[in-house]
Length: 264
Ligand code: HEM
Image (tube, rainbow, N blue to C red; front, side, top):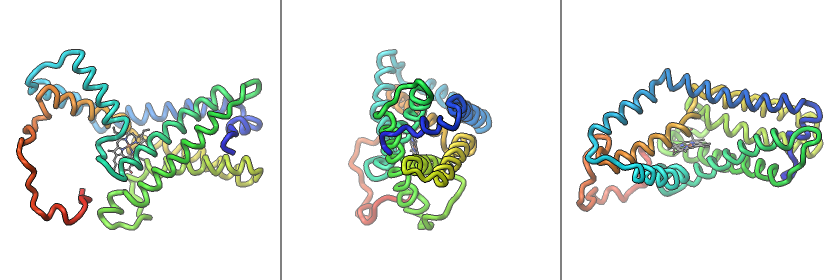
Protein backbone atom coordinates (compact mmCIF):
# COMPACT_ATOMS: atom_id res chain seq x y z
CA UNK A 1 0.00 0.00 0.00
CA UNK A 2 2.74 2.48 0.99
CA UNK A 3 4.45 2.21 -2.42
CA UNK A 4 1.27 2.51 -4.53
CA UNK A 5 0.13 5.84 -5.98
CA UNK A 6 -3.63 5.87 -5.24
CA UNK A 7 -4.23 8.63 -7.82
CA UNK A 8 -2.83 6.55 -10.69
CA UNK A 9 -5.27 3.73 -9.85
CA UNK A 10 -8.08 6.29 -9.63
CA UNK A 11 -7.04 7.53 -13.10
CA UNK A 12 -8.13 4.15 -14.53
CA UNK A 13 -11.74 5.30 -14.00
CA UNK A 14 -11.48 9.10 -13.72
CA UNK A 15 -9.69 11.39 -16.18
CA UNK A 16 -6.27 12.55 -14.83
CA UNK A 17 -7.21 16.04 -16.03
CA UNK A 18 -10.25 16.03 -13.71
CA UNK A 19 -7.97 15.17 -10.75
CA UNK A 20 -5.59 17.99 -11.70
CA UNK A 21 -8.50 20.44 -12.02
CA UNK A 22 -9.66 19.39 -8.54
CA UNK A 23 -6.24 20.27 -7.08
CA UNK A 24 -6.20 23.63 -8.87
CA UNK A 25 -9.73 24.33 -7.59
CA UNK A 26 -8.56 23.63 -4.01
CA UNK A 27 -5.60 26.02 -4.48
CA UNK A 28 -7.99 28.72 -5.73
CA UNK A 29 -10.21 28.17 -2.67
CA UNK A 30 -7.19 28.86 -0.40
CA UNK A 31 -6.44 32.12 -2.21
CA UNK A 32 -10.10 33.26 -2.29
CA UNK A 33 -10.76 32.33 1.37
CA UNK A 34 -7.56 34.01 2.61
CA UNK A 35 -8.11 37.22 0.61
CA UNK A 36 -11.76 37.55 1.75
CA UNK A 37 -10.68 36.88 5.34
CA UNK A 38 -7.95 39.56 5.09
CA UNK A 39 -10.44 42.10 3.72
CA UNK A 40 -13.17 41.24 6.21
CA UNK A 41 -11.08 40.89 9.37
CA UNK A 42 -8.82 43.79 8.35
CA UNK A 43 -5.85 41.90 9.84
CA UNK A 44 -3.46 42.97 7.09
CA UNK A 45 -4.45 46.64 7.60
CA UNK A 46 -3.80 46.18 11.33
CA UNK A 47 -0.48 44.44 10.59
CA UNK A 48 0.81 47.24 8.34
CA UNK A 49 -0.44 50.03 10.67
CA UNK A 50 1.33 48.29 13.53
CA UNK A 51 4.54 47.95 11.49
CA UNK A 52 4.34 51.68 10.60
CA UNK A 53 3.85 52.61 14.28
CA UNK A 54 6.77 50.38 15.25
CA UNK A 55 8.99 52.06 12.67
CA UNK A 56 8.27 55.46 14.24
CA UNK A 57 9.21 54.12 17.67
CA UNK A 58 12.39 52.44 16.40
CA UNK A 59 15.57 53.38 18.25
CA UNK A 60 17.75 52.62 15.24
CA UNK A 61 17.33 51.78 11.59
CA UNK A 62 18.21 48.22 10.49
CA UNK A 63 20.37 47.78 7.40
CA UNK A 64 19.52 45.29 4.65
CA UNK A 65 22.06 42.76 5.99
CA UNK A 66 20.70 42.91 9.54
CA UNK A 67 17.08 42.74 8.36
CA UNK A 68 17.87 39.69 6.21
CA UNK A 69 19.69 38.03 9.10
CA UNK A 70 16.72 38.63 11.49
CA UNK A 71 14.30 37.23 8.89
CA UNK A 72 16.47 34.15 8.21
CA UNK A 73 16.88 33.46 11.94
CA UNK A 74 13.11 33.79 12.40
CA UNK A 75 12.44 31.36 9.55
CA UNK A 76 14.94 28.78 10.80
CA UNK A 77 14.17 29.05 14.52
CA UNK A 78 10.68 30.49 15.13
CA UNK A 79 8.81 29.33 12.02
CA UNK A 80 10.44 26.02 11.07
CA UNK A 81 10.24 24.70 14.64
CA UNK A 82 7.16 26.71 15.80
CA UNK A 83 9.21 28.07 18.72
CA UNK A 84 6.16 30.07 19.88
CA UNK A 85 4.77 26.86 21.39
CA UNK A 86 7.72 26.54 23.81
CA UNK A 87 9.43 23.29 24.72
CA UNK A 88 7.09 20.36 25.22
CA UNK A 89 4.31 18.23 23.84
CA UNK A 90 2.38 21.01 22.03
CA UNK A 91 5.42 21.87 19.99
CA UNK A 92 6.29 18.25 19.13
CA UNK A 93 2.66 17.53 18.12
CA UNK A 94 2.49 20.72 16.03
CA UNK A 95 5.83 20.14 14.29
CA UNK A 96 4.80 16.56 13.46
CA UNK A 97 1.42 17.66 12.08
CA UNK A 98 2.89 20.63 10.22
CA UNK A 99 5.64 18.69 8.42
CA UNK A 100 3.28 15.75 7.86
CA UNK A 101 0.78 18.06 6.16
CA UNK A 102 3.46 19.73 4.04
CA UNK A 103 4.73 16.30 2.87
CA UNK A 104 1.15 15.11 2.21
CA UNK A 105 0.26 18.19 0.13
CA UNK A 106 3.53 18.37 -1.82
CA UNK A 107 3.38 14.62 -2.56
CA UNK A 108 -0.29 14.94 -3.68
CA UNK A 109 0.68 17.62 -6.23
CA UNK A 110 3.73 15.68 -7.46
CA UNK A 111 1.81 12.38 -7.74
CA UNK A 112 -1.16 13.92 -9.57
CA UNK A 113 0.78 16.14 -11.97
CA UNK A 114 3.82 13.92 -12.72
CA UNK A 115 2.92 10.30 -11.97
CA UNK A 116 -0.78 9.93 -12.83
CA UNK A 117 -2.15 9.00 -16.27
CA UNK A 118 -1.20 6.81 -19.20
CA UNK A 119 2.40 7.07 -20.36
CA UNK A 120 3.41 8.64 -17.06
CA UNK A 121 6.32 7.16 -15.09
CA UNK A 122 5.75 5.36 -11.79
CA UNK A 123 7.37 6.34 -8.55
CA UNK A 124 7.75 4.42 -5.29
CA UNK A 125 9.31 7.20 -3.22
CA UNK A 126 6.49 9.78 -3.71
CA UNK A 127 3.69 7.37 -2.67
CA UNK A 128 5.74 6.60 0.47
CA UNK A 129 6.11 10.34 1.19
CA UNK A 130 2.33 10.79 0.67
CA UNK A 131 1.46 8.00 3.13
CA UNK A 132 4.11 8.98 5.71
CA UNK A 133 2.90 12.61 5.51
CA UNK A 134 -0.69 11.51 6.16
CA UNK A 135 0.37 9.29 9.08
CA UNK A 136 2.44 12.12 10.66
CA UNK A 137 -0.54 14.50 10.27
CA UNK A 138 -2.76 11.97 12.05
CA UNK A 139 -0.30 11.33 14.91
CA UNK A 140 0.38 15.06 15.55
CA UNK A 141 -3.22 16.14 14.91
CA UNK A 142 -5.03 13.50 16.99
CA UNK A 143 -2.54 13.94 19.83
CA UNK A 144 -3.20 17.68 19.80
CA UNK A 145 -6.97 17.45 19.40
CA UNK A 146 -7.64 14.65 21.87
CA UNK A 147 -5.18 15.56 24.63
CA UNK A 148 -3.47 18.94 24.22
CA UNK A 149 -6.24 21.27 23.08
CA UNK A 150 -6.63 24.13 25.54
CA UNK A 151 -10.34 23.49 26.20
CA UNK A 152 -9.65 19.81 27.02
CA UNK A 153 -6.31 20.17 28.85
CA UNK A 154 -6.90 23.39 30.78
CA UNK A 155 -10.65 23.93 30.81
CA UNK A 156 -11.69 20.33 31.50
CA UNK A 157 -14.15 20.07 28.59
CA UNK A 158 -14.68 16.52 27.29
CA UNK A 159 -12.56 15.56 24.25
CA UNK A 160 -15.68 15.10 22.06
CA UNK A 161 -16.88 18.72 22.49
CA UNK A 162 -16.64 20.31 19.04
CA UNK A 163 -16.72 24.08 18.41
CA UNK A 164 -16.25 26.24 15.30
CA UNK A 165 -12.55 26.75 16.13
CA UNK A 166 -12.04 23.00 15.57
CA UNK A 167 -13.03 23.25 11.89
CA UNK A 168 -9.43 23.48 10.65
CA UNK A 169 -7.86 20.72 12.72
CA UNK A 170 -10.80 18.34 12.24
CA UNK A 171 -11.01 18.89 8.46
CA UNK A 172 -7.24 18.38 8.22
CA UNK A 173 -7.50 15.14 10.20
CA UNK A 174 -10.47 14.00 8.11
CA UNK A 175 -8.42 14.51 4.91
CA UNK A 176 -5.43 12.53 6.20
CA UNK A 177 -7.54 9.75 7.76
CA UNK A 178 -9.91 9.23 4.84
CA UNK A 179 -6.98 9.48 2.38
CA UNK A 180 -5.18 6.67 4.21
CA UNK A 181 -8.38 4.57 4.44
CA UNK A 182 -9.09 5.13 0.71
CA UNK A 183 -5.55 3.98 -0.20
CA UNK A 184 -5.80 0.96 2.14
CA UNK A 185 -9.12 -0.29 0.75
CA UNK A 186 -7.97 0.42 -2.80
CA UNK A 187 -4.91 -1.82 -2.38
CA UNK A 188 -6.81 -4.49 -0.44
CA UNK A 189 -9.36 -4.70 -3.25
CA UNK A 190 -12.50 -3.80 -1.27
CA UNK A 191 -14.34 -1.81 -3.95
CA UNK A 192 -17.33 -0.68 -1.80
CA UNK A 193 -15.20 0.76 1.00
CA UNK A 194 -12.70 2.18 -1.49
CA UNK A 195 -15.41 4.32 -3.10
CA UNK A 196 -16.94 5.27 0.26
CA UNK A 197 -13.59 6.61 1.49
CA UNK A 198 -12.86 8.29 -1.83
CA UNK A 199 -16.12 10.26 -1.48
CA UNK A 200 -15.25 11.10 2.14
CA UNK A 201 -11.71 12.14 1.09
CA UNK A 202 -13.08 14.48 -1.59
CA UNK A 203 -15.68 15.89 0.83
CA UNK A 204 -13.16 16.56 3.59
CA UNK A 205 -10.85 18.35 1.14
CA UNK A 206 -13.73 20.56 0.01
CA UNK A 207 -14.55 21.33 3.68
CA UNK A 208 -10.87 22.04 4.54
CA UNK A 209 -10.13 24.31 1.57
CA UNK A 210 -13.65 25.72 1.19
CA UNK A 211 -13.67 26.59 4.90
CA UNK A 212 -10.52 28.76 4.87
CA UNK A 213 -12.55 31.93 5.53
CA UNK A 214 -14.13 30.49 8.71
CA UNK A 215 -11.23 28.40 9.99
CA UNK A 216 -7.70 28.84 11.38
CA UNK A 217 -6.22 27.72 8.05
CA UNK A 218 -4.62 31.10 7.31
CA UNK A 219 -2.61 31.04 10.57
CA UNK A 220 0.11 29.34 8.53
CA UNK A 221 0.44 32.64 6.63
CA UNK A 222 -0.22 35.12 9.48
CA UNK A 223 1.92 33.45 12.16
CA UNK A 224 5.20 33.61 10.18
CA UNK A 225 4.46 37.27 9.30
CA UNK A 226 3.81 38.13 12.94
CA UNK A 227 6.99 36.31 14.10
CA UNK A 228 9.12 38.26 11.60
CA UNK A 229 7.50 41.56 12.63
CA UNK A 230 8.06 40.80 16.34
CA UNK A 231 11.76 39.97 15.90
CA UNK A 232 12.37 43.02 13.69
CA UNK A 233 10.67 45.17 16.35
CA UNK A 234 13.00 43.70 18.98
CA UNK A 235 16.08 44.29 16.82
CA UNK A 236 15.27 47.95 16.03
CA UNK A 237 14.33 48.71 19.65
CA UNK A 238 10.65 49.56 19.01
CA UNK A 239 9.53 46.35 20.85
CA UNK A 240 5.87 46.90 19.86
CA UNK A 241 5.73 49.72 22.42
CA UNK A 242 6.47 47.30 25.26
CA UNK A 243 9.03 48.03 28.00
CA UNK A 244 12.39 46.22 27.79
CA UNK A 245 12.88 43.02 29.83
CA UNK A 246 14.05 43.84 33.36
CA UNK A 247 17.64 42.93 34.10
CA UNK A 248 16.71 41.37 37.46
CA UNK A 249 16.11 37.87 38.90
CA UNK A 250 12.63 36.39 38.36
CA UNK A 251 10.70 36.47 41.64
CA UNK A 252 7.35 34.74 41.35
CA UNK A 253 7.29 33.07 44.79
CA UNK A 254 7.13 29.33 45.49
CA UNK A 255 3.53 29.05 44.26
CA UNK A 256 4.71 29.03 40.67
CA UNK A 257 6.26 25.58 41.22
CA UNK A 258 3.04 23.95 42.44
CA UNK A 259 1.48 23.37 39.03
CA UNK A 260 2.51 23.26 35.38
CA UNK A 261 1.35 26.46 33.64
CA UNK A 262 -1.79 25.58 31.66
CA UNK A 263 -4.29 28.38 32.33
CA UNK A 264 -4.04 30.33 29.11
C1 HEM B 1 1.51 23.52 6.99
C2 HEM B 1 1.63 24.36 7.99
C3 HEM B 1 0.85 24.25 9.28
C4 HEM B 1 -0.11 23.35 9.67
C5 HEM B 1 -0.69 22.19 8.89
C6 HEM B 1 -0.53 23.73 11.00
C7 HEM B 1 -1.48 23.06 11.73
C8 HEM B 1 -1.98 23.49 12.94
C9 HEM B 1 -3.09 22.91 13.63
C10 HEM B 1 -3.87 21.70 13.15
C11 HEM B 1 -3.29 23.62 14.75
C12 HEM B 1 -4.37 23.41 15.81
C13 HEM B 1 -5.47 24.39 15.53
C14 HEM B 1 -6.44 24.52 16.67
O1 HEM B 1 -6.17 25.26 17.61
O2 HEM B 1 -7.49 23.87 16.59
C15 HEM B 1 -2.31 24.65 14.81
C16 HEM B 1 -2.18 25.59 15.82
C17 HEM B 1 -1.15 26.46 15.94
N1 HEM B 1 -0.20 26.71 14.98
FE1 HEM B 1 0.00 25.78 13.18
N2 HEM B 1 0.17 24.82 11.40
C18 HEM B 1 1.03 25.19 10.39
C19 HEM B 1 1.92 26.22 10.39
C20 HEM B 1 2.20 27.00 11.50
C21 HEM B 1 3.25 27.98 11.56
C22 HEM B 1 4.21 28.27 10.40
C23 HEM B 1 3.20 28.51 12.81
C24 HEM B 1 4.07 29.57 13.47
C25 HEM B 1 5.07 30.16 12.96
C26 HEM B 1 2.12 27.90 13.53
C27 HEM B 1 1.76 28.19 14.82
C28 HEM B 1 0.67 27.66 15.48
C29 HEM B 1 0.24 28.04 16.82
C30 HEM B 1 0.93 29.04 17.74
C31 HEM B 1 -0.90 27.28 17.10
C32 HEM B 1 -1.72 27.30 18.39
C33 HEM B 1 -1.40 26.00 19.12
C34 HEM B 1 -2.13 25.81 20.41
O3 HEM B 1 -3.27 26.24 20.58
O4 HEM B 1 -1.54 25.15 21.28
N3 HEM B 1 1.53 26.99 12.69
N4 HEM B 1 -1.52 24.57 13.69
